[in-house]
Image (cartoon, rainbow, N blue to C red; front, side):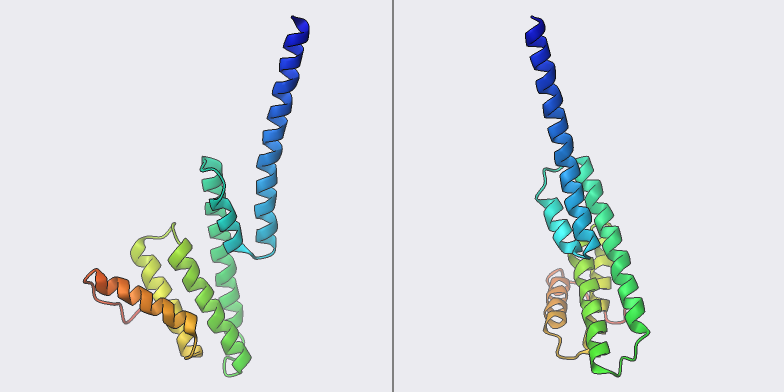
Length: 159
C-alpha cells in the first residue's frame, strides 16, 4: 500500500512540475518575442494557447506594451526631419503599424476609438507617403465599413 501511495505521489509531483514548466515556457516565449519587438507574433502565439484567465491577461499586457512601443517610436520619428525621404517613409510606416495595431488588436479600446484612431494614423501615413498601398487599403476597408453601416465616414479626426 505504501508503495502505491508513494508512486501516486511521485506521479502527481511530476505532472505538477511539468504543467508549471509548460506555463513558464509559454510566458518565456512571449517575453522573448516582446524583447524582439515582435508584438504581433506574441499576440498570435497567445491566441494559439488554450483560453484561460492567465492567457487573457498576458494578451492584455502585450497589447499595452505594443501600444507604448509604437507611440514612442512615432514620437521619436517625429523629431527627425520628415523632408528627408527615408525619415518620412519610416514615420509613415510607424503610423501604419499603429493604425493596424489599433484596428486589429485594440480590443481594450471602444469600437469608435479603434476605427477613428486607425483611420487617423493611416491618413497621416498617406500625407507623408502618398503611395503607401497598405494605408490606402486599410482606409478603403474602414471607410467601406462605415458606408456599409450607413454612417458618415469621419473626415476631421484630431491628432
